[in-house]
Length: 429
Image (cartoon, one colour):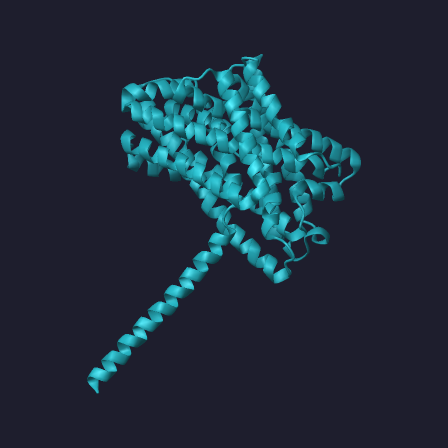
């Protein structure tokens, strides 16, 4: 009898293990089915503009500004959640909802500013992609710009075969950036105790550090991806009842948390590597090219190559995302349908033209951040006004605490962007 009991107990345990394993596999498959939209959006948080500010911050102030990356990521998660919620609740993207809610004059203003923001951010991303090609293959910047334009057009063209293909491609490019910076950190050998301390404990050494912190934090939340996220969730938002929409939103929360925290790790890695290499050696870095050139004698040719590959992947993916955002905002506000190819060319052509004009890449990056800073309130405020109203959102309308947190974060981010605008113009005068 004892033998029979032990066999039945073993069978019972094995059966339970199989049941638990099957449940876990089903849950993982369910989550995987929804992963994607936030990964596309997260590209905006690891674009070439972030490379510039993070490298400068680490080179000038060691590990002391890593906490800025953490808090900017927390705020970005909140705002991207609101954008996804708006899209899931209404079945429309933010620009389409603005077209329904606001007057024609306000919508024309929102349309012009949002399109300028999409063009400005695509210009910055194009420069990153072109710089990556130039640094890797020594191809002239003008030719590299054309190659970036062709690659961007090809990536966005893949939308014809379904959004999931774009999501997978973007996830692969993000994976390349992550792998490159993991390799960089392995070579840089940072002081992990200092990294942990400065991630959790905020500190500002002086006025210059404050300016860099404002640049890192204020330029992190991008207006174009606030519009884009509400559009990207629509592919999984077809013919859903209320409970299904609630499930969709809960899955999108997971998507946002995973994708945005990967973006946080990459941004933090940029600061960490820059601090461990450039600050430690007392090297002043004024441009992305300086960073690439300085890495080779310090960490070897593989390190500088990894940096260029990361920049190239970031530039390609973020150029495509900027172009997709331009498509989203172009016809939603004013209810005029434009050709899909026209919508793509509107954001791509100015970017290629800028490179042919021989504009200084760093100056172009700064100007793009100024335009994005100016455009930010015109994305956040309409989103908060719409998501707070039950007549548009139904059961998904913001609770009072969400509204208060939303306005507090928005006013804080907008204030930082105002400081960024002021300091940029002041230094230019």
